[in-house]
Image 1 (cartoon, helix red, strand yellow):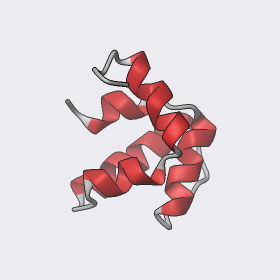
Image 2: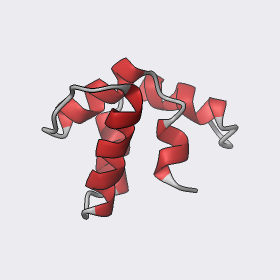
Image 3: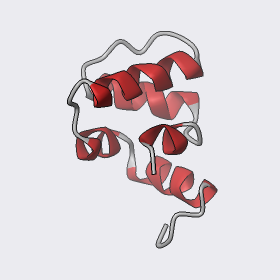
Length: 71
């Protein structure tokens, strides 16, 4: 699974929180925020760091939306 498929299911505010936690700019539209996180990942950012930057309830909501087992 690509991380962008999960991030698309996050709310824009959820993405802003993750960006802030990672020290990245939080401005922009939801697609711009997703792209910033995907680029961070492509540039060597660990998947676990990106997922860990999301609040647990936000991550759970997105995982349920993509029918991730155990969410």
